[in-house]
Amino acid sequence: MASSRNVGVRDEEKLKEDDSPTAKKPKFERFPLTKWELAAALGIFLVCSTGLVCVYLTMPSAEYQSVKLPRTLSDLRVLKDLFANYAKDHPAQFILGYCSTYIFMQTFMIPGTIFMSLLAGALFGVIRGLLLVVFNATAGASSCFFLSKLIGRPLVYWMWPEKLKLFQAEIAKHREKLLNYMLFLRITPTLPNLFINLASPIVDIPFHVFFLATLIGLVPASYITVRAGLALGDLKSVKDLYDFRTLSVLFFIGFISILPTLLKRKRVYE
Image (cartoon, helix red, strand yellow):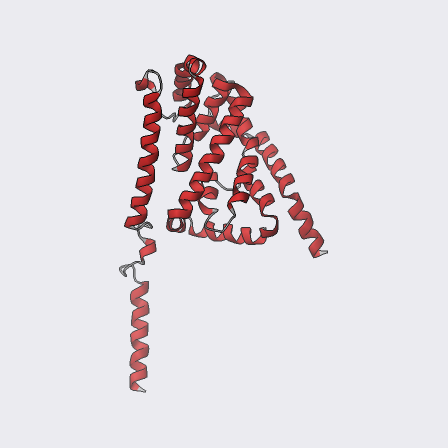
């Protein structure tokens, strides 16, 4: 009896130590990547950076001091004036550099792709600009998907543990009509695209579903952004792109995409 009582006391003391603020945290609550995972991420980043630099070095001379990733509409207007003639005189080199930059930003989650989409509309018009943006956004999201599949699991669990659980539960509910549900997420701003890119391989979304939903689902929002690039001088804020009317249209299109799932669920309950 005495020995069992001592065991119980030791178990209680151990639980108190585990719950104390000074207790040693599990490995996943600290930095989520191991040394090898961090080395792999830095290696991929270095390879892509080297390729991107080589693309720019092979382009004809330009005012490189003025070239930078746009962070504001003012930066974007400067880039538009800088590249207006250059894009016409050297379309192949410019498109190669533009695509490399866009895919690089999308792959490594660098903010500012919305400015790149506006720039495409300002320089290439709606049709060519839309094709460029959808291609680059899909390619960049696909690269981010595979990068997350390689090293992203601990990172996503660390950054969005609760959101990931909810996302996984919703994916399980819509598994039979997964493409429709993913289209809804891509068309509407229900979840950030960054989270979808990173979390999709972790919750076992097949790549072909992810790819199709991205390719088709990004068209409406990309069209709105590219078209706004035509009137770049009149645009006062990026927030003006998605007013109440625009969001209503996006949610309406998204509702149509998920309608088959809702109808099927209704028939099951009947």
